[in-house]
Each structure stands twice: as structure tokens, then as C-alpha cells.
Image (cartoon, rainbow, N blue to C red):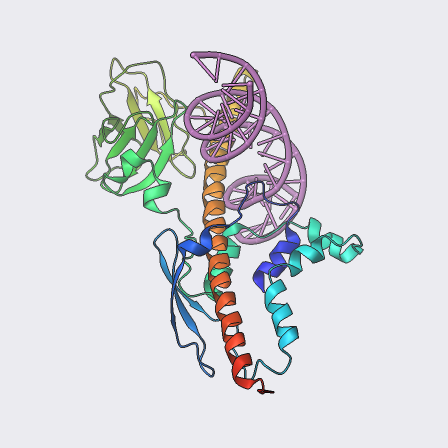
Length: 318
DNA sequence: ATGATTTGTCGTCAGTACCA
DNA sequence: TGGTACTGACGACAAATCAT
């Protein structure tokens, strides 16, 4: 059981209160195929409106659940508590301690494992979904191939057609968008591509941090700022101010600037990673809550079935 | 209305896992 | 082994809620 393994890896309880006290009332179930011999598939309507198909807890054919009804009842009643009780045990041997202290798998892995167990549970995509991952003002525009964030908080999207879009995070919708057009967008020569855009506010310099093989720099050419997207090794055209590459740094000030730039890049990446991690965590928690709701419903159904079979099989003494 | 408390979100740091 | 991704932990901050 995946949740059994991963619950052991929790270092501490998750801060938020994930109690699903009112989940049961909000979950509607359309059962189908609960009979023996075929795996029970339950159609569950989640509180969020999502409908998922869930396979039964007991997937192997059970010829009889009456043979030891007490044991079965106990198992059903405590199936969700075994992990907690095991975790709360005072005596932990070294192996178990290592297990507990070891890092738990990422939410993506956990949820993908879960999705392979339970059909209907969506996988966490490798790439973030468009509606959540990209800035809202950019999502409605052309499909970008790269999205960057400037040091001033603006988002830069480089679309496949060579168009560059700049959006201000504080603005709503497309109002903050600024479209840039490549001056040589048709057939770019090897080397630099100079772009220009009409900034709504000409406030100081901007610095774009671009991972990988592209570098975006701001050129100080008159009132309209110019940006250059180029490979780091390409030759510089005249009139374009190129940010110094790490290999060409000499003075302590340049080294300090480079260190600052690297730090900001690292912070920016970590910021985005933290956002993505929290998004996955929310998705993971939602998935767990859904599973809890499903299991509660199935638990109730099994108990009802058990009672029915008890009534059928118990001999009438009167 | 106002101060205290709770809750949610975000950025950052630190540590681990994983991969080339 | 270095770089990167991931995530727990922590603090700051704002909004919501509660008590008076």
C-alpha cells in the first residue's frame, strides 16, 4: 500500500488540518458491480464536482466474509488507523528510525503512483498546466516557448513566432502585456537578435535572467529600451550592451555583480519551485481527501453488506 | 470599533535525492 | 562530483475571524 509506506516517512504531521469531517455528506456514490467475482467499480462524485471511478477495496473474489466476522469488522474499522498507531509506538528500532527520517518521495511521485493504482486520479504533469503554471495575462496569448521573469517582477514570454510578450504581474488581464517584435524575426542570423518594445513606463534598467543557452540583455539605446536575445558565445553587434559573461569577469565589482546575479537567479528558480511544490502538495492533499471520502463510502457499503449477509446466514433460533 | 488570534500565502534557507 | 529539482521548516505579512 503506497500510503502505508509514505505515512511512515512523514517526519511530522502536516500542519494544515485535513480532517474530512463533512466530506461524507458531500460525496455521492453510484455503485456498480459490487457483486462477487468482479472487481467493484464505484462512481464517486467528489465535493469538487469531479467524478471518478474507484475500484473496490477488496479486489480479489471473496467467497465468504462471514467465516470470521469479528476479525473482518475489526479490520475494516481500523484500516485507517494502523499507520498512526504504528507511528506512535514508543519503541523504534534503528531501521524504522532510518525509514522515518528518510526523505519522503515527492508529491509528483506519490500522486503518480496513486494514479496508477486508482483509475480516474489525474497524474501530476511533468510540465505545469497552462491555467495554473503560466501567468494569467500570458496564458491567453500566443503559446510561449519560454517564460522568464525579470528582476522587476515582469514576465517575459518568448513565443514560437518570435514575438516577445511582457506582462506586469500587478495588472489584470492583458493590460500589462507589452508585445515585442523581433526586428529580424524572419530568418535570424547566427548571433544576436535585437528586439524593441515601447515600455509603458521607462523606469530604470531591467535585467532578464534566462537559463540555458539564451541571454537577454538590455541595451541602453535612447528612450526605447532594446533587448537582445542571443547565444552567449555569439559575437556582439555594435551598439548593444551585453552583460558580462562569467568567464570575462575580472574586477571584484564584476565578481560581486555576477554573484548577485547568480543569487537572484537561484532565488527566482527556488521561488518558482516552491510555488510549484505547494501546488503539487495541494493537489496531493486533495487526492488524499478524495481517497478518504471514497474509502469511507466503501467502508460503509461493506459494513452494510456484512450486516445483510449476517442476517441471511444467522440461524433463527426461535 | 478594536485588539488579539487564527489562517493562508509567499519567499527564503537548508538539506536531500537524483542525474549527467 | 557538481548542478538541479524538490520539499520541510521558518518567518513575515495580510486577510479573516473572534472576543471584548
